[in-house]
Length: 169
Image 1 (cartoon, one colour):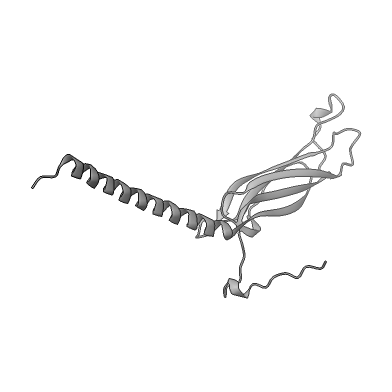
Image 2 (image 1 turned 90 degrees about the horizontal axis):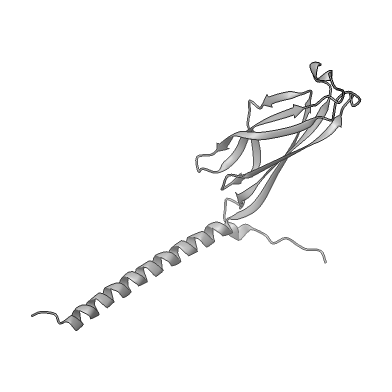
């Protein structure tokens, strides 16, 4: 017995519908997993400050540990503030900068810290004083900010033990 062209087309349509339904099911599973994962995360910020004295660059031997665990590589921003410039008549205020030289990750691939470097530069005000070494008694405060998607910290014994916060109105 041979299949007619109509029977072949009908059989092909059934296979296409089955494949479409399987693809839709997989897409729904992926969407559910992404929703679950997103509900386990939050936007977080880890802020740190460091006071430096003098000019030059320093590489931290130990990593800065984050108070949160980031899922993705956090964005890094730095700023600086002059604490003191005892030689303001000869030298412009010091500039601080910094960067990440390596990330620390745990066994699950979460970002838990960073090895950083900090630098302070100064430029002379008076022409010809650039032959002098910059003063080493200036102080700069470095503001380090790490931002990104972090894992929510929930109780180990389950979410049913999370108590709602009371809001004073």
